[in-house]
Length: 257
Image (cartoon, helix red, strand yellow):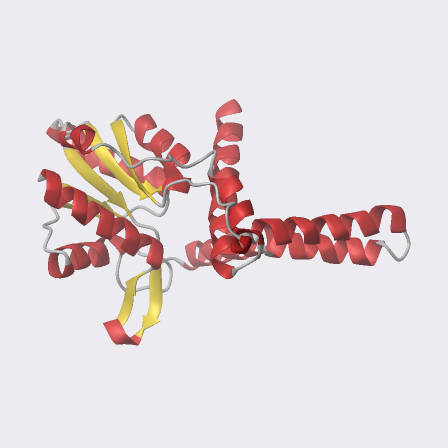
């Protein structure tokens, strides 16, 4: 990979860490605490508000409130899946330094999609396309490792492997280059619930008729005491939701230009 591409990827990762939660809210609270020394009427509420928001999105209740507008509440009907022509599984990241797997393996999000995609493929017999390029610093592409997992571990053959894309938009466009010339326009798109609005929009813009098969469906969490207490899993879910909301806003702004 060219040095400038690697630098851009590093800069992008740093920006995500600083702007998305928890980084963005921690910086906002710190700014409020510093400002409170000279401007207490502004700095103190800013600090308290940022910390309160960080607490909220770190709870299952807060995470579920963020994901409800994004994710479907019910799984896709198998009858709708059977009416499609191909099953597309975009990558969701890799995990480096996985010595137990020989160096690199699928990150949890990708593995969840692969597992659900394998289930749907076995139940419907639809041909499978996996999509995902090679991240900076990795030896293998997402698509290659997804194919290996599907075929070796889940017993599901992969018909097509797209390895050049770097993001959801490129996933969609590269998949279109493979499938549309074959007359395969109706696809099942396997993604996470919080990915649905943006992923659907990108694949439809690429020319597909999309049926979304989502894993991690939406559910309002409020019934247990634990739903009001912060934990790492809830904060991670909120991070994913905020990332998708930022992507939706970015796509809307780009379309308005």
